[in-house]
Image (cartoon, rainbow, N blue to C red):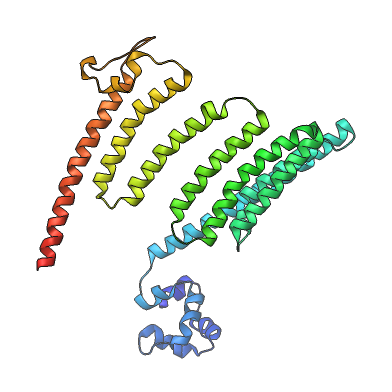
Length: 339
């Protein structure tokens, strides 16, 4: 205690006056004759610049001091970064305001810049400033700023394109708002429902884009590709999240599914485009007489087939190791129950 008092450049009288005790009492504390009352410990720690842990253990808490120093440094860096961002936002708005008035003698494209910076502010700086209900406040702010940005673009370039952009934007905003509502209202099956929402949202977004742009690509390309992609995503999710298997067994199954995705994806893509080389069919990947090559119109391609076989080999190894580990765990659990 005496060493910390001297490091704080305090005399016994000064420390005693700040703690409302006599200097004799402080002297007894330092010599170990008596000990301070527990109610005085926070004041002593504050005056000596130490933590209560250091006071009771009578040693320097270097790790705690380092953590506090790093935390202060991080807070300082965060405040400095946010200050720099705000200054940059303000300077950008001021410069664009002056330039727009000086060149066009009216506010024209300035509103696009202003709403764009508002959107950037709601995504970068606002999350640091808001302490309560951060997610909904930032999401609502970003939504409003995005709609204002579309409106400003419509005022500048014409309102004809705003309707199409507004429809696609509304479809895009359904995903974050839907995920927020899902995680707020539903406490069970959140991962499954989130993936289901993402799947439905993808089809809805493709439908909205098709309604806006037109064309014959929705049912011939977009929906089939999305269906195949999400089929593999759901298989991955089911194996990783639902199946009560050993991690090595799950890894083996996921590797096997990834291997099968190569011939399935290649054959599916060829079927959609209307042309399929004999060596790129699904059955060709399992034709061992072809060796390590797959014939194509451009020559001999070894990549897909090589990766496919390597993944199958890795899946077999993982499944064998996982089966052995799962069997050993089952025997150990059975032995424990018998005891």
